[in-house]
Amino acid sequence: MKLSNLDERIHVMDAGANVWNIIKDIAESGVQEEAFYVCDIGDIMKKHKEWKLKMPRVQPYYAVKCNDSLTILEVLAALGTSFDCASKAEINKVLSIGVDPSRIIFANPAKPASHIRHAAAVGVDLMTFDNECELHKIKSLFPTAKLVIRIRCDATVAQCQLGMKFGCDPEADAPRLMQIAHLLGLEIVGVSFHVGSGCQDPPVFRRAIAAARNLFELGATLGFSMNLLDLGGGYPGIKGSYIDKIAEVINNALEEFFPDPEVHIIAEPGRYYVASAYTLATNVHSKRELINHEDGSITSVMYYVNDGVYGSFNCLLYDHMEVTPIPLNAAGRKIRQCSVWGPTCDGLDQIVERTLLPELEVGDWIVFENMGAYTLPVASPFNGFPVPKVHTVIDDHNWLLLKDLHPMTEEHFVIGSTPANLHLGLDIDGRGNIDEWEEVA
Ligand code: PLP
Image (tube, rainbow, N blue to C red; front, side, top):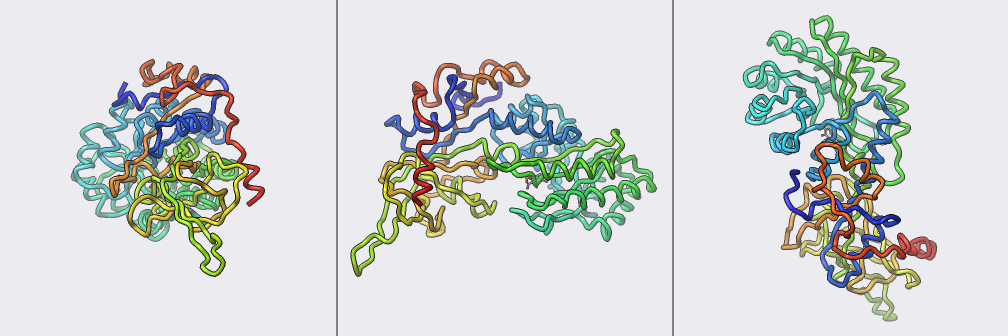
């Protein structure tokens, strides 16, 4: 087992318990003040099952950058995914849990030389490129690498566009780069693209797959035996989002352009696997009422919680994420206009600019769902506010499915104890009365 400390173990929940029970138990334990996460491994397992069902031909290579928790990597390795790594450190992390180098793609088209050397040394030979300079670097540092040319094909709407940084033009640039690779004696085995993270334009996958087909034809004329198509990332991951439409477009396009089952189809999903698995609970440590000086009424309330944009909510800045605050226990209270702020002294540290919430008191908790993607790997303890700790849980059914799959071992799990070493109260009613206050608002 690679878990570096006991806190990272996965707690097997009592029958009938759920993430909201756990959050309530920890928040109301009387000893909890710091913000904390609860991560539900069952949610990740559900996603994996859905992926296999909806896109059986596409092997997922989980994008480690999205959330590099060792526990998550181990769970995904046990489920059978492969991995997309962006750097030497990510490669090492994945290898450290016993994953074979053949299950890794080094999917960064612009790699520092030392990282290419390292990939060669540890046997990670599959890697992307999108420019001539990279080809020369690879020629001198790792000439036997298996290359995947990354082309640009942007979604019309995406949470984070990537095309302005990576991906060569499939018509204007790719043929020239493939010629150069050929002249250098390098081996191109496939084509990759990333349509943009949080893609809201499913048909873009058909356009990209069609463009890849043309390059397979060109590759054949140059003598490359190309057998890998990498569909990149972009799949949604928050609660209530589905991959059905994207899966339909992809499956149809694969049938049309890549009917040959010998072509290995892979993808690099990141947020799809982890976004909804993580729920964050923050504590209201201060509040400030803004007063109408004419009549003395409260116009708005500012709530300060103990995680902000320098911590988990960096996703508001870097990942263009929108978050919804859910008070843990506030049914029946007066609804007020308010804003929610992080704990640091920076004015930028605002989580929600304007919303309606039941009136909260110092010590109350505000919960945020869908916080598993592009949050923790970027978070810092700026101003001395710690990055929230993660309590990882699994229900007993999923535990039975997972517990014997390598690299999971008995030591990964704690049975009969809650994350905070509390007794799990099963009489707590899920999310509380959220519907009630939403109606009032
Ligand atoms: N692959 C590459 C090369 C990426 O840069 C990213 C994200 O930036 C991903 C995969 C994961 O994308 P997503 O989280 O949208 O699935």
